[in-house]
Amino acid sequence: MPTMTNSFDAVYRRSIDDPRGFWGAAAAAVHWFTPWDSVLDDSEAPFYRWFAGGETNVCYNAVDRHVENGRGAQAAFIHDSPVTDSQQTVTYADLQARVARFAGVLAAHGVGLGDRVIIYMPMLPEAAVAMLACARIGAIHSVVFGGFAANELAVRIDDAQPKVIVAASCGIEPGRVVEYKPLLDAAIARAEHQPSACIILQRPQARAGLIKGRDFDWREAAAAASDADCVPVAATEPLYILYTSGTTGAPKGVVRDTGGGIVALQWSMPNIYNMAPGEVFWTASDVGWVVGHSYIVYAPLLNGNTSIMFEGKPVGTPDPGVFWRIISEHKVKSLFTAPTAFRAIKKEDPNGEYLKKYDTSCLESLFLAGERTDPDTLRWAQNKLGVPVIDHWWQTETGWAICANCLGIEQLPVKEGSPTKPAPGWRLAALDSAGREVKAGDIGALVAKLPLPPGTFPTLWNARQRYFDSYLKTFPGHYETGDAGYIDADGYVFVMSRTDDVINVAGHRLSTGAIEEVLASHPDVAECAVMGVADALKGELPLGCLVLSAGVERAHADIAAEAVQLVRERIGPVAAFKSAVVVARLPKTRSGKILRGTMKKIADGEAWNMPATIDDPAILDEITAALQTVGYAQE
Image 1 (cartoon, rainbow, N blue to C red):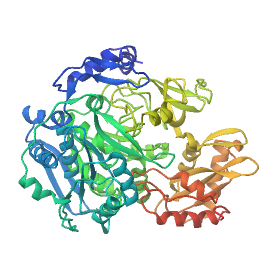
Image 2 (spheres, helix red, strand yellow):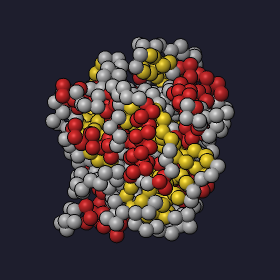
Image 3 (tube, rainbow, N blue to C red):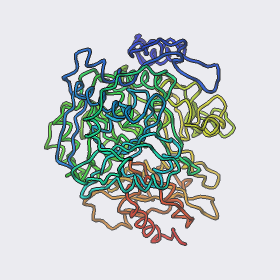
Image 4 (cartoon, rainbow, N blue to C red):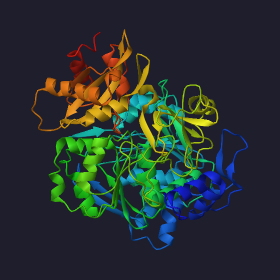
């Protein structure tokens, strides 16, 4: 390991040995109206707060200061929408004007410091404008994925109790228009809390009917409003609430604080992603997810980058070459997306024929996160793109990477299947059920020692005890990530599956991720999912669902048999892997996570509820039928 002062090891040690000094220095890159009293307030441990006493403004740091420093003519956002066949560039000066005016719209409706605003929009620049407008006046935004079911939206309305809801009239999916206003109206009708106003952005693809006295047209309201200035906001006040599904069914409102949030995101852009101001960064996600909050909107703007906003899909809008077109046209330096996006591209274009049509020489790195990156997908991306492919691990709760290969500090050797080492500020351990550290290489519950670094979540919205019970109670002094995995002798972390996805086969703890890794290496398999299904003799047995690459015409039974044999050869009989079935596609959330828990319930013949975040409910009928062919999913 290099020993120069800017080596990863040296930077990491500084962050652990002197967290106050390390993050205090990082905070110098952020503008403060009032300096903090203490970098880390530990007076109420385990409820830690960063930069207590400080005042700043996220919008000023993300927009206004760049205009003041001469970046006004630079593109802040490039909106590329293959579903509407349109592109739009928004400069920093344009963005400042639009945000200041929309902040004035919100203020005119009584929104101020600490008030909540729900944003229910597709991938449009106006979604970012609304987020930044809230931050400008100290309001707390809660973005709900556009087109989310009415009941789920109603639950979030009742929990956040927004003064105003900002929505678009519709979203555009490949081949169809999804009208949002009927869903919004139904949600408000179900909710006990009633917003005082709804501000609707009318899109030409489907104009919404407005309810007089409650609904207001975005453009008309903006024309009549005055600009609003940035206001100082306490570092410990919330910037936003982002809901994540809870195991009890009630959503958990993850809170991101103002000061710690922007310090961590500002630090991450040059240090993890190796991005300098003025360069083009593309996160192919959605503003409805944490990745969109952190790396479509806030981090790129804080760092003075140009951020791509993409309204489309990795395949089908119009073909598997759309990612390569955008990289080539907009000179993208770094792409950040989910492994499932690359699996979809690989499935449709396994030989990379579409890639040959574009010059992607501007691309220097690919970052993957959202779920585990299997080695086969990582190798495919490396071979086709010829750039470092960086698997990194983080969560809605953490807001930025827990583990990452920090390209801006020192690129470490890649180990397939690992997001490398803990990022600066993170102290990780793998523990057994009694809270003892397991041996290097053994699977345990992955936990982070407290205090967590800045940018993570200090609490859940209006649920301090639930925050403690859900994340801090099981392993005192640690944050329970809910992920299982192991840390090897070199300190590399391997995230194998959610803790719930570690299956117990006759007393042997097996990771579904390890079996999936083997299945994904089969040349005909594009992606796969493994879940543990009930077995009277062994407790649980692994069952694999395989999606084949485009153009594969071999007998499905032969491929399934080969997959079973592969697992037997590489993991051994202990895996007791005997069943694999070919399916047309896998059920996923809109962010690309595979719904293994729902599939397990279907396979076991248990009652299950339709997941609110599912991308296409019809897939579950297909899965049920396929599982029945191998003796599962019986009523």
